[in-house]
Image (cartoon, rainbow, N blue to C red):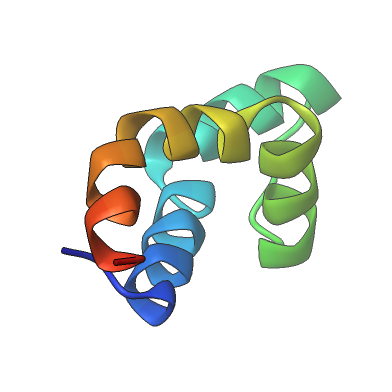
Length: 64
């Protein structure tokens, strides 16, 4: 089970991951290292929805 704190921490880790940095940098055309920009890109380009889909069962169990 995953509580809200763990869920949010997981999203932040994914937003600041090397993979998201690469996609974000490709989008802007230069290297992006600013966490705020990475998080905004992650949110606006479906990262939060994808994360929710991946962790749906863990959330359903923790809400009971």
